[in-house]
Length: 119
Image: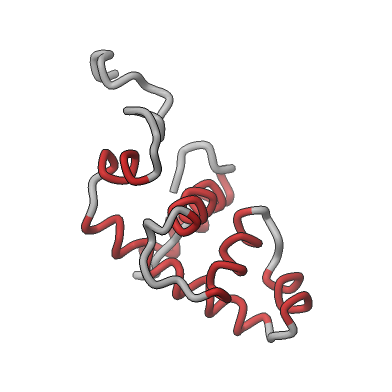
């Protein structure tokens, strides 16, 4: 989750995490898509990439399902698979590893310059 998410989204995500589910909110979906596009998120199928890209742009599962000629449950299932893969990647890599993998400058994932003292 990212602090920039709207409060209702954060509250729903917190409830999902408390229930043991993996959560990637809209802000992190874009990051997951970038990692997938750059080949840093291993093993995404073409369909998982399609669903991830659509979700990163805010498309609903209903819209994705219609466009891809699958059920909403199937579209959601593809995103669940992406979430599990992204969560596994994040468990095994530090934020600095992710920045390097995506070709970002140090602190590119945050607004804070790493040379600044912690808040």
